[in-house]
Image 1 (cartoon, rainbow, N blue to C red):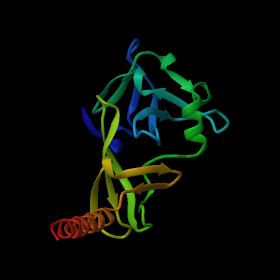
Image 2: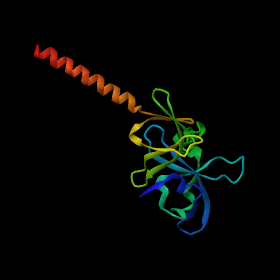
Image 3: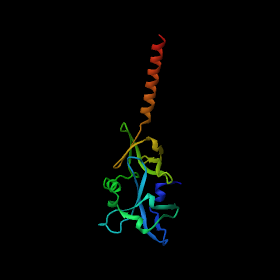
Image 4: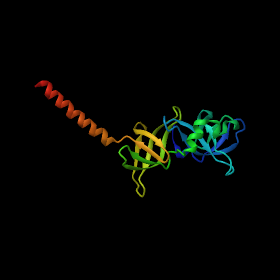
Length: 179
């Protein structure tokens, strides 16, 4: 199923056994190396409590009105899964991150992202410029790295420039070979 991240955030988490609401999705945790959806961050009851998460593999189904999980035991503290704890400590979240090209050009801010729940990966980023209604859709294949408050994407202008240089080099080699 394809769904936008913002549609999931603030959805209630429903326990499959009892059918009761047990928490609320606050954010989506993405592996910054692979772009895979790892888990959902759920609300904390008190300030001093540790972050509580639901591993994506414990999600049974995502509906328009809630996220169904196997049981209440599916919600664990972040320190129980090392990689997730590290990502949370570094505060790596996509929504609200600045999008930059590899050459340092600022594209905008990640407003939302489309994810594929079957394959657990990001498909596109919706990027908005501040104080502008303009939005860009950027394919995940352009994402080079996901960092704290930053997403670095492949610069398409660089790619076009490289193709032109390769074309010029190819013509030069063909001319030299035919001489």
